[in-house]
Image (cartoon, rainbow, N blue to C red; front, side):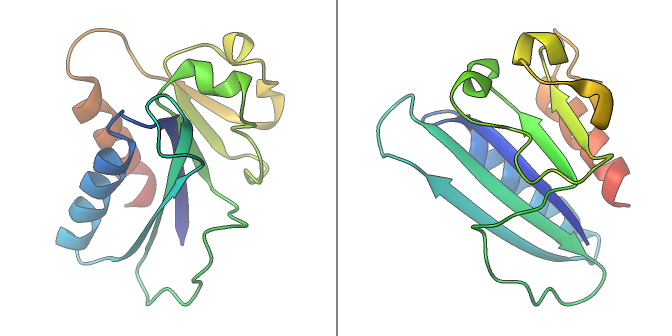
Length: 134
């Protein structure tokens, strides 16, 4: 099973991006779970969504104590208020538009994939994530 956690702010398409990835996995014949987590229902509040993808039925039901393989940071300012590496598996992957230094994290324990500026970031992000779970 691969677990992907998306970090962003309320009002951004965090849940929509997680849902789009889940739809692509379902179309590929995978089992999928999607959880959204809002700290507060107000614009700009930090939030995250979790997507689990597997070839077999997923029995895990909790979204509270996640241990993602991948953390996707959609809004770099979230890293100042939330530990985006919390629970991330050793050797896991962080995908973000900023550098690890800009996010205030040590990249020694994690693989880092930058989201390129310009172009269609969403399609590039989804393509990179699909490569990880195929």
